[in-house]
Amino acid sequence: MLDWPGCRWQSGRMRSVSGPHLARLLGTWKAGADLTPAYARLAAAIRMLVLDGRLALATRLPGERELARALGVSRTTVTAAYDAMRADGYAASRQGSGTWTTLPDPPAQPTGPVPFAPAPETAGLIDLAHASPEAPATALREAYEWALAQLPRFVHGHGYSLFGIPELRAAIAARYTSRGLPTSPDEVLVTSGAQHAFSLAVSLFADPGDRVLVEHPTYPNALDAIRRAATRPVPVPLAPGGWDIDAVEAALRQTAPRLAYINPDFQNPTGLLASDAERAALGRAMSRSRTRTIVDETLVELALHDGAAPTPLAAFVRDELAITTGTASKTFWGGIRVGWLRADRTTVRHLAAVRATVDNSSALIEQLAVTYLLGRIEEVRAHRRSELTKRRDTLIAALRDRLPGWRVRVPDGGLVLWCDIGVPVSTPLAAAAERHGVRLAAGPRFGVDGAFERWLRLPYTLAPEVLVDATDRIAAAFHSVAGGSGEERSELIDTFA
Ligand SMILES: Cc1ncc(COP(=O)(O)O)c(C=O)c1O
Image (cartoon, rainbow, N blue to C red; front, side, top):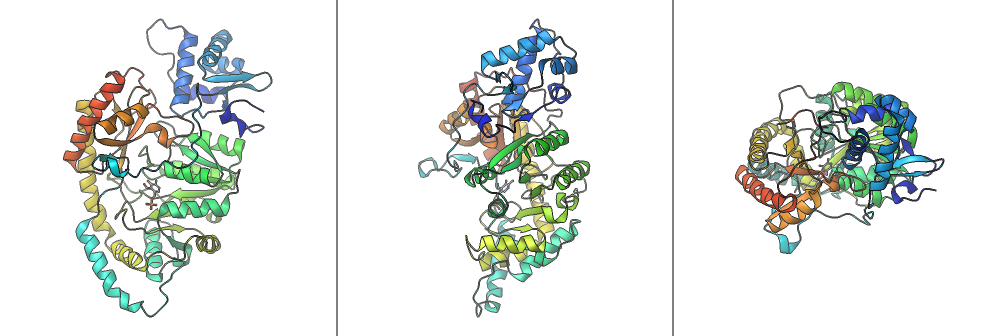
């Protein structure tokens, strides 16, 4: 049994990283002209991978000889690097168990979700913790007027629809079909949001103690749902520009997760869009290992680029293993509590039975409104695209001006920027920002075990002038906690605005 809390669950099944894989993750660790000894640079580079969540906690490091060979350095260098990491609290060893990654003060595991909702006394803050745009006002009003006009058709019945009303299931199925994933209405279950759909799938398919593979970083409420179900997240680091298929395959092999949770379309929080090649590789890995895969398409309709939309990930996964979740929350509005999932008919029936233990139906009027809005989806998407592009570019320009040391990838869609803030102060920054009138979600909210303290997620969902004001306030807060420094540059991101 291993001592460190993050290791406990993995006793007997610890993840490991091979020498060549670690060498690849380390990239250009040797570069630079300063006189820091090689062992110290190596230790710092591995420590950075741990802090950035690119090397999961409790991962067994390669043997010293193996890593020395992979890096082309002496074994003494690796031995000294591992010693330095142990001294700093970034590694632990035990005779016979090798050396594995740790953090100096492992954070207490949260006992429950930390809701983002502003407390009443903090109402009036600029809220950059949520990433949800306002409603398209005219289309929304027309949708509810239309829905109200349809009500007489329904009022003589009982009003429940456990699976969703037929016209909405048909509209959702048609949307999948038009995106290249042929779907019939009985492969759709209407829910009260994508998070509801995700929780249903976790409660049906995972038992307490089971593992759920997640991207790292990932959507915090999914992590909370995984922990609430007494299942355990297996974080798989994303590569700088996309999905690290080797790491996914290694995690599948080494931890045999019961479920995988993948967010391939403008991933929250990185904004990454999986290519068709990555989708094919992910689909192969999941199908081969028979891992049931929950594909979260919450942000799929929010493309801001001209390229063709990639094929839905579910098209690459064996049909009975794929559960795709979707929602009206981001495309249309978070105030409409309608989402859905797509799966094979048997899975849909089983999930509907689980749903009946929580609630019996989504609201009829909301379902009708979404049916109408799906009929106008191209118009709403075009409007979203032009507004969000302006806001994204405004926020990036303001950050460049006020916080030139931060690095930001320009996302091709979605709602957020994932910012490398240069120093590991995301949590104190979020606390200081509240005092400056801005609510933020700090980087570690998107990770497991305290990773991402050097990162911050910033939504570009508010009006441009509010984003500029918020950036001024965040810059003041940042200077108060970091003294304006930004020395620990990431080498992990390859393209920047
Ligand atoms: C990736 C992702 N999945 C799911 C959700 C939850 O969506 P819903 O409001 O439909 O429950 C969100 C909301 O922010 C999200 O960003």
